[in-house]
Image 1 (cartoon, rainbow, N blue to C red):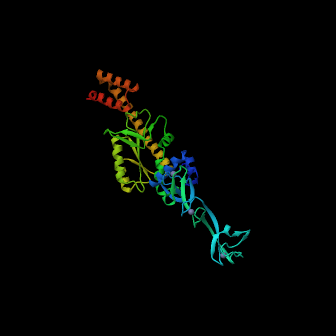
Image 2 (image 1 turned 90 degrees about the horizontal axis):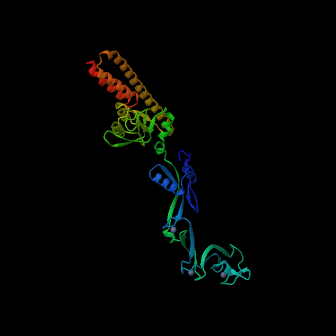
Image 3 (image 1 turned 45 degrees about the vertical axis):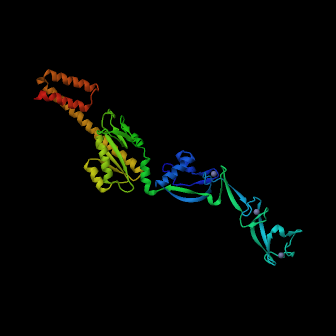
Length: 372
Ligand SMILES: [Zn+2]
Ligand SMILES: [Zn+2]
Ligand SMILES: [Zn+2]
C-alpha cells in the first residue's frame, strides 16, 4: 500500500465476492491472498478498518450469493403471491384488489355496492402476501435462503459478513516502512567497487550462536566466512522510543560477532538513556522516522564507517612499509634465518597467502629476537 500509493483499500462488492482491486494490482496477488492479508494486518494493528457494508451470508460457507425462496407461514405452501389490498370503508370489508374487480368495475364482494372514490369510501392497504393454497394473508411470507453451494438456511441462522475499507494505521507507519526497506538497494547505491554485503545477514558469533542483523558489509579483499564484517548493522523498531533494554540486547549480538564498526538503526528514535548506552560502547546510532529518511541516513552512515575503515587499512599499510625500511637498515646485523623468514613472509604476503594484519604481526614476531 505504501509503495503502490494506496491510501485507502476500498472494497468492491459484486456476486464474485469482495475485492480490493487497487491492492491486488499493487501487490500483484490474488484476491483471496489480499483479503486474508488485509484482515491479518488489521488484527496485528497495522491497518485500521471501517465497515462499509454488512452482507447476509450462508452460515455454512460464507457465500453471499443467495437465492430467496418464499412460502406460506401458515401451511408451508410455496403458492404465495403478492397482492395489493383494498378496504371498503363503508362496510369494513378487506380483500385483494382483484376480488373487487367485478365486470370491469370496482364493486364490494361483500355488500355489493360500487366503490365511488379512493379515500372517499375505500382505501388501499398496500401489499400483502397471500397463499392460494390455504387462502391466508400475511404481511410477509416466510423466507428461506439458498446459497450458491445449495446450502439452505433460515433468516435467523444467517451469518453477517462485514465488508471493510482499510487504511494504514498512522501510528504504525514508520514500523511498516522500515519493515519493507530493502537494505540491498541502499548498499548497492553506496557500495564502492568490491564491497561484499549481506542483507539481512545471519552471522555466527564467537559464542557459536547465530545472530540475525539488518546487514553486514566487508571491504574489498575480505572474506565474509573468515573475517569479521567492517560494518555490522542492527535495526530496532518501537511504537514510541527504542529503549535501553532493546539496545543492550542488540549490543550483546554485535559484540559476539565483533565487527570493526557497528551501526544501530532505530525507528523512529532512541530514548536518551539508550543513546548514552550506545555511545558508551562506541556504537553509531542512526534514527529515522520513515523510509526515505532511513535510506538517506543509513547510506550516509555506511559511507562514513567504510571511509574510516579504508583509512585505517591505509594507515596499516604505511606502517608495514615503515617497518620494512627499518628492517633494511638492520639487515647487516640480522641473522640469516630471520632474513630468510622475512623474505618468505614477503613472498606469502605478495602472493596473497596471508592478509595484511597477519603479515604485520608475523613480521614483528620475526624481528623481535633479532633486535634483542
Ligand atoms: Zn453455503
Ligand atoms: Zn362492502
Ligand atoms: Zn397457506
